Length: 291
Image (cartoon, rainbow, N blue to C red; front, side):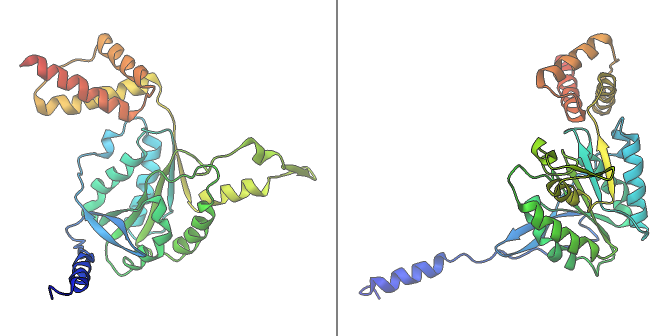
């Protein structure tokens, strides 16, 4: 064999061939969440370890959105008709947190969460196929579902959503978040061909095409930028949540509010995520100074 180097090279190449990793089996009585993992032309559900530390009560100032999505989810887990939901609006205002808080609230009632990326939504029929005979109730969660100008993928996705959602079993629901209400950038040029016919306004076909994608969701929930008062109330909530288990005694003051506002101004964001980050900074600093 030593006299035949070509044979050795061939054996070496055979050894270098990648062996597909075994796909994990999911025990849905134990696993609360999974992620759709693309694998070549196919894919599989990969179980996730999730933290259930965020509660619905932690979401301050979004009472109406929390009530509507909570009611929709409650209908779903009880086998009643429910709508696919689009949560849209400013970043950091609690859209994704609300979905994860609902998982924490209803996991004991059989609710499960499956994360799927925007680029993998064409695999929805494969995902749904694996879930339709299971007793649990599944929310397919797509975070940050949006398209940039010039991308034509939304037309493909529109047809996929049509087929997948209309034929989805009653134990599957799609929740998506986006910074845009219509998921696709809207341009001034889209409005150039609007016309009036017998007093009725007819939109351009391009506009209709873009709006049609978000129409696949029966429930739309809007999330708006925080006012300063709203932001400071969220800061107060998170400081209390972090300070209590650490045994830190504190009291809200004007000086603390000023620090929080400066923190938000320096980052150009006044939202829930920024409030949580400031709370971690301030509580950590107080605990450090006590040592």
